[in-house]
Image (cartoon, rainbow, N blue to C red; front, side, top):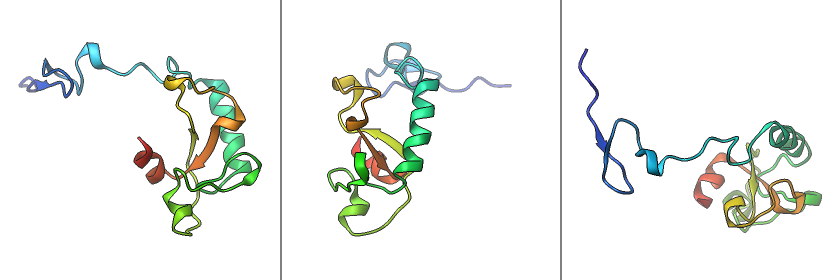
Length: 109
């Protein structure tokens, strides 16, 4: 069986068998704070705030929700940190969370 060709890391150009070289690989989800506690909170959050653009108290915001901006009611699939954890946002602070559909969450990045 032939070996897979190496590809350049998009960040530094080093050849690697994976998408990124070891230096640029993303830490695991649990290492980034997405553990069991987060999973339980996210599940409860989406039950309480099921629509894209909803924040604490059920208030809708169009800051990151393109769906809400165009008046569409779309089910949320993701609990998003308004201020990312890596930028100092609180991981489990309810005022730092919002519901987003997968498309709006991907656009936010």
